[in-house]
Amino acid sequence: DVKVTQSSRYLVKRTGEKVFLECVQDMDHENMFWYRQDPGLGLRLIYFSYDVKMKEKGDIPEGYSVSREKKERFSLILESASTNQTSMYLCASSSGLAGGDNEQFFGPGTRLTVL
Amino acid sequence: QKEVEQDPGPLSVPEGAIVSLNCTYSNSAFQYFMWYRQYSRKGPELLMYTYSSGNKEDGRFTAQVDKSSKYISLFIRDSQPSDSATYLCAMKGGWTGGFKTIFGAGTRLFVKA
Image 1 (cartoon, each protein chain N blue to C red):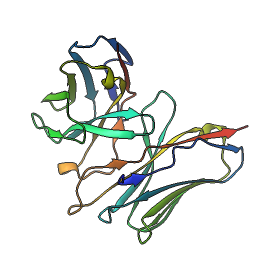
Image 2: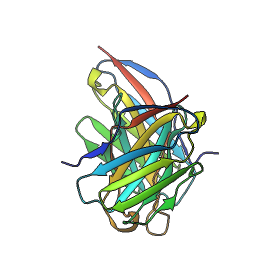
Image 3: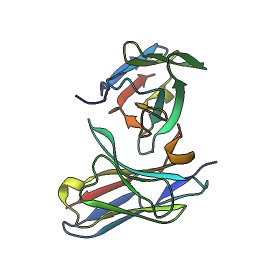
């Protein structure tokens, strides 16, 4: 059974803080993704990775960075948190070379509030 | 214009009703069409997946794709309170159409007992 876990369910941070969101998957998937989910806007892709140490920008990468040092772990970093980064953050993983997948497995999400 | 349009609802129906959820899209390169279900405080999970045009049935759920109209639908028969969730359509191209999955905004469905 595929499992994607995220380090925190709820997080409250102050403006300007550096924030780390961790995601771990246990199915040896090649592909990992970070999305944010906002009402009326749906899921928007922040960054994705097709392999270790590899990353690609999604639709809204500004203000974020990522790290993938190990295949099972994909971290999202908010360099200097701002209030407009208050959102639900979802991590996902999938198998398939170069994104040739059709099912993404999602973690439970981290609800981040930036004050 | 968004690549994928989906009415956010909410949609409220009585138990036993037939539910119709829909999405329209603009990119003719999309070939893979998915429906994800997301319960409150959980991540989305894949419900149905179809390739190209046509219908696919799985129990009470039927996914329909009309590529000529750029329109996809999910039908739920004999709806149950446990079907109350947000339903997100998703789609992507193939080897020539790009690998990125595009999600709709999601439709919130409430099924009343």
